[in-house]
Image (cartoon, rainbow, N blue to C red):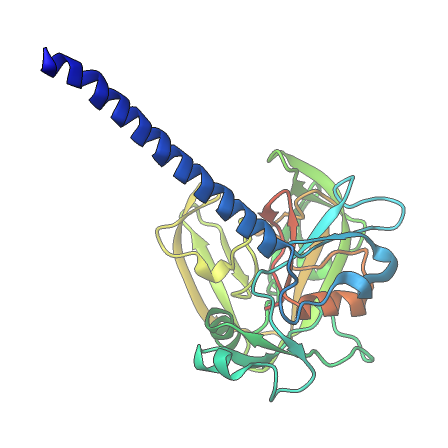
Length: 307
C-alpha cells in the first residue's frame, strides 16, 4: 500500500522538475534575445553611416543597412539594400595606422582598396583598409576583382557578341529571380585596365563550356570563381579545370543587365556582375567599395564586395 502511495509523489516530482527546467530554458532564451537585440542596436567601432550618400538614401537602419534610391524608380521595383559586411574594415588614407596592434597580432593587414570598377582621371586614390587574414590573402593572391577577359562572348537574342563590342542598351540574355531566362537591355559597361602581371582563371566545364575570367569575379552564388574546384557542380555541369595563367591583354570588361539578378551568360556560363549600384555617383560607389559594402537582394548576394 505504501508503494502505491509513493508513485504519485514521484510522478508529481518529475513534473515539477520538468517545469523548472522549461522555465530556466525560457529565461535563458529571453536573455539571449535581449543580448542580441542590444548588440544590433550598438554602432560598431569605426562604423560610418550613410550620410555621405545624401539624397540617395531613403532610410538607415541597423544592423548596418541603408536603402538607396535610383532616381524616379527603384532597383528591383521597390528598393536595393546596401548591407555592410559585419567585419567592415577600418578606413584610412594612411597605410600605417589602419590596423590596431591587436588586429596585427591576429593576422590583419593594412592594404589599399580597389576603388571603383572604372577609374577616371580625377578620381580620388582608394583608401587603405584593415583586412582580415582571409581578405588579405585573397587580395594579395588574386588582386582586385576585375572582370571578363577580352575574348569573352556574351549571349544575346541575336547570337553571341564579343564583350568588347557590346553597347549600352543592347539586349542580352539574363535571368529573373524565379530563374527564368529573359531578354533585357544593358544598363552599364566597364572597361578596366589590368595591373602588371595580372592573372585570370580558366574555368572549364564537362559539357565543353570554358571561360577566362578574373579569379575574384563572382559566380551566380556570389562566390569568387576561383573557389570552384574540379568535381564541383556548376550550372548542371561538372567543373573539370580551374587554373590560373597570365593575362594577355591590357583591359578586362564587365556589364550590368537591367534585371533583378544582374546575371548574364559569358561563353554560355551564367555569371554575376561586378558593377556597383548604378544610381550612385562614381565617387560614392568608390566609397562604398572601400567600406566593404555588399550589394544584396532578398538575402542573395548578387555582387562582389570590392575586397
